[in-house]
Image 1 (cartoon, rainbow, N blue to C red):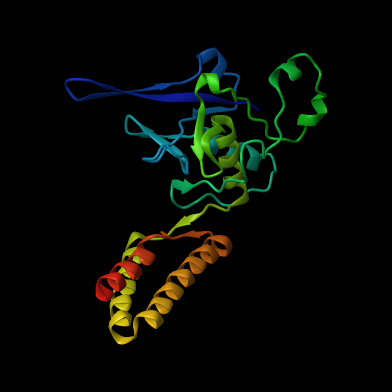
Image 2: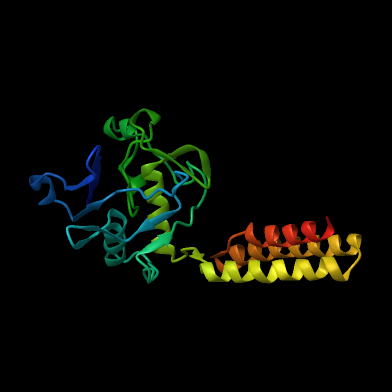
Length: 242
């Protein structure tokens, strides 16, 4: 019933550009007794935040099932209600909350038999380090100060897969089209109305767009870029008025 972790390491050498990738699975004698094993690599964005995950990882031309996908498959086979997998291998993590949202039990308490085994019955249990010393902590939307342990991120990933609530990212062309329309509208408003009514219209349009993006995220799990449209409204307005 155990899923073991593997690590896909990537090393980029200095001087000549050379990248080395190695898949480090558990020892063979451990793999034989496990239900499955998979890479636990965390995907970070350019700002180092963790917002996305992948069902599989590519290595040497083969797609390897990730740690979380293995857990999902075993949970579904065991009768735990599970939503269909995302159609896109890469999906956005729908975090349930900050670190500590999921119940946490100290490993030492389990080893010393301070915790009753019944507490784990029927549960999916993830084992991992939470200390800052091992540097397995990351910034996330609910932990901007880099306090979310990797094991807690995987708990949120598994929860996202089982609940079937991955957040959808809006297409880039939609953001661009809305920004172009907003810029044109702001320029027309600034020339067709006096400064104060024009400012109120532009401000109302920006606030309305912000409310709309919040509603789309809240009720439809659709993530649209927030800044392009307000900026597109403000810049032409200021330029025409000046």
